[in-house]
Image (tube, rainbow, N blue to C red; front, side, top):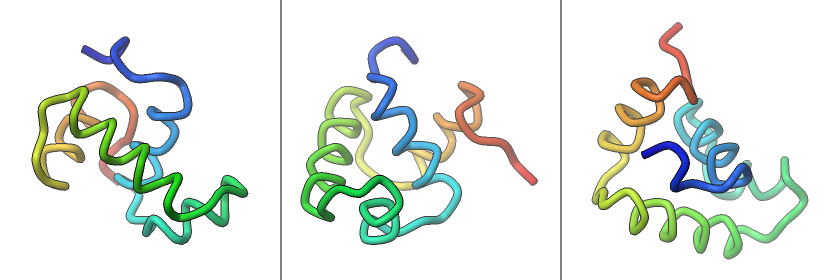
Length: 68
């Protein structure tokens, strides 16, 4: 299922799983917070997820993020 996401979407998933807010991610990637929110909505839609816990579990399971 990992191939469903673009490189940018995987990057955003990692930053979300690392605890960054949409505003912080937007600043880090030099885009608007609305762009990040659009990416987030697309990520949830593509993965069929509805909440942050599911997204973080996906990120860990697929090697996008790690548990410290």
